[in-house]
Length: 132
Image 1 (tube, rainbow, N blue to C red):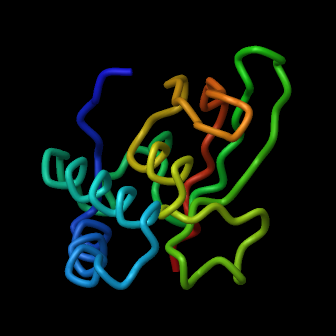
Image 2: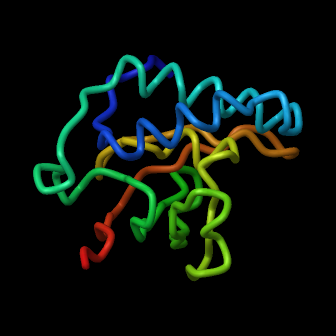
């Protein structure tokens, strides 16, 4: 699938920069995902949290995905790795699925590589993170 420009907050971009600084400490798959996130973030459009559209996947967003082949829906919460325990159905941005979701919008389709092959997943809904 072609790369698309993502929307990202300055805070999330800086957190990805920090992950990139320590990239060598991670497992090989996580390194690839950090590099992908860093690349996407460096090309992305930075917006303030207040101006982030509600239909964009950001850390702490609750996301509903629909499998294109089966129509089956499931939900998750996109998180930074250290936040996983605080959220239901967490998916880290360091997983292939999490990296693919970051900055994408409702209606977009991502590819999730699994042991069984590639799944195409459409973002059916996004609930933005709760703001304090």
